[in-house]
Length: 495
Image (cartoon, rainbow, N blue to C red; front, side, top):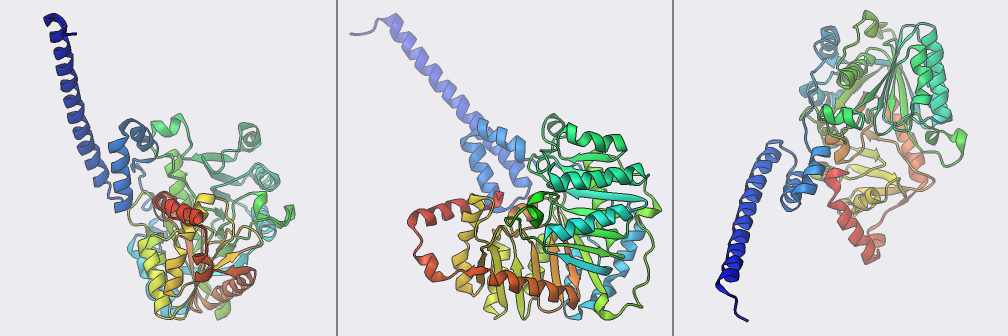
């Protein structure tokens, strides 16, 4: 039935309005993509991450904007504390480059990489002790807390309100009541289980507890990304004793609570090198609360001269800190340089093996040069998607000559490297993009044969408890498994 002139004009008008609205929306979409595209491109992310954000915000503008506002902006209004923390500490660090030349002459040049990114030079260290189980580490930690006289500084990603967490808390409360200054910095995500009831005794005793990038209204108000976390594990007592490594404060790390505890590596040390870790803590404290603690000379006390110690008791440690507050990515560059510096062996233990292109190429190049490259990863990690993404790199690594092992007894959480006979790394950082670019991390580069030898012994023990990955085994994987690995690999920039 033909429409009368009136309804026909109405239909034509409605159609014209729809066309106009579609044109307006198309123009707005183009302007949106161009505008947000310029913002993202100017942030100078990796090409993969930039393209991923462009597609997400272009195709799903509303959903993409919500996600981007949560984890996308890279603004970190973090004013550096490096000048305030004591020019003396930095000057001592620059003067300490000779420590690396004495301890590891073949690898002393590696020290220039972190120095070039603004990190400290290698500094003398003594009394280095490695812990491969939580029971021994927590016992040493409690002993150091009990001996502290002036201050204790702690920074942890995960602090659980379990037996170990409460045991350490109570030890801190006791020292705080004795007049020791205690500052405790805990991550807003990793330590989210700590509630007011558990924290109240700390506050009552005078322990100064701060949250690093807490979730919720405060984080939004300060315009900070929700996924910028402190993954560091730091304890400094009186500026002379330091602890760092892979272990958080939790029952999961200790054999005291059953055979399923995580296999991890941590370390304790003394000497000048503690001052560099102290500086990292103070910078993070300022970032967390915008307040600089009144800087006391006791934070950077004079340390004994190590020249009288025998060579086997003298090492140099270079503390390398890294985070999204700078595009220097010091740990990423240090790992890349350390891999390239290997001449005879490169033994790596990591729970998360998701190398970006530079690290993957460096590993392959080292293996092709007949360096003995071995990597131990967990047979079963704590994240299925991370396990799948990691295994997507196995074939290319194996074809280059890298030997891969899956640790079977339990979850292995250690983050270590052994380079030749005189260089070792104990870190909080994994071999993944999150550790290299999104988390605040810490790595201790140890120049000297003693620690390298001990870590090598531990590696051999872990390898004996592992199964070697072969190309033949990868070839018979089910299609669904290979598809899952390839799909998970697409998320590598975010893992």
